[in-house]
Amino acid sequence: MIKLLLIASLWCYNGLCLSPEATAVATCESGDTVTLGTMDWQAVNVNVDGTKDTGAFQFNSYWVWSSENRWAIIPVANNVYDISSRDFVRLYPDATKAPPSVQYEMFKNLWDNGYGWQHWSASKPCWDKWMTIKNGKAVFTGD
Picture: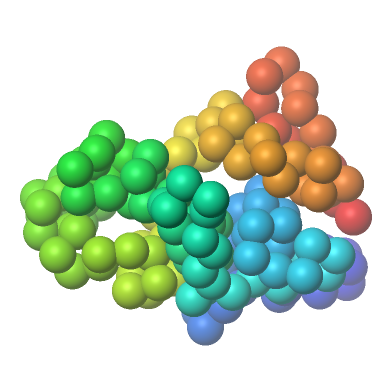
């Protein structure tokens, strides 16, 4: 019981509590890749094709967090924040401009209850020390 409370506390950031799966992915995408719960909400990495991966979950500036290609933004903007995707992009031109709660909503939309793990397949060799794929779904197994 104490271990669960300690682990659970690692998944909270300024009152925002993340799922263990989100914590593992963010640790591997923008954290130190070793210490579960490390993440950088302001992380920016420039790719060889000129796109950028931003935020704790490293959302790509063309495929995910884009003003032209808004397929991932639309459900979050419309259903969670009740704004248009254009307004969402104006408010948050990239993930580093969005608060952690908005970045987490984008993660949850893409993660789709564990079935969207392929969006983060490049970092799977890192996060698979905490998660496993069962029936096509990424499931947290612990540390």
